[in-house]
Length: 304
Picture (tube, rainbow, N blue to C red):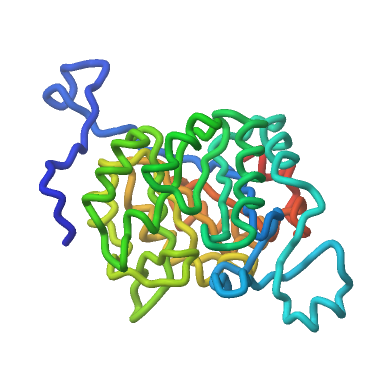
């Protein structure tokens, strides 16, 4: 059990104080929304295989790139799903015009990378184009959270700073909450399976923490953030089916929005996620989206 020493806040004040002795449970979410994404790696918008990111050499596996033929990809062992000919601002404008909010911009290069500034500049341009419509993650800490929020981000997304050195740091979480404000904070619980259990992973999904993804953990962390983002890293970028077990687990938590990402390859997977997520989970689709070389129409998803 993770203990914060703070009482849980399970209830909101109702419009009618006569209900439930003055308090009612938060209204349960029963529908799915599409949350778009802009993943930036080496200064370009890409779709990558989640478990393949490596800081060394700035490497990431992908499945498709629009600038090369099939033989080139085969030789590269499908190192990249998709490399866009458009910049991050193009997608931000597209999502803005579609009225889609709550999508995320993710910087996939570490601060030591030679590509970091190019990646960061792409992200800042996307925020400029769609102020208030996008969240941002990747290297977020108290020192840069305000900058990103002032640049137009609705929320900052945090993993590695809070789950430091493989453990949950309540001290760092408090610093992030103070810097960004709970209402602007998304905790990234992206995870991989080990010993038949999902554990949060950090540092571009390369390092396991000792923090499992459980209902109890979500209950304790939920009072410190506005949303959760969860990538099913083992299937991320493969467009070959969702993690139904993880969706079942996430659906048990009902106190703040959760966005699931990973493995969606068809509208059948969307329906499966609705079923296992009980309509409570929002969804991000990357590699399978027609914008990124896939087959699921953007026009279909934006109508969710």
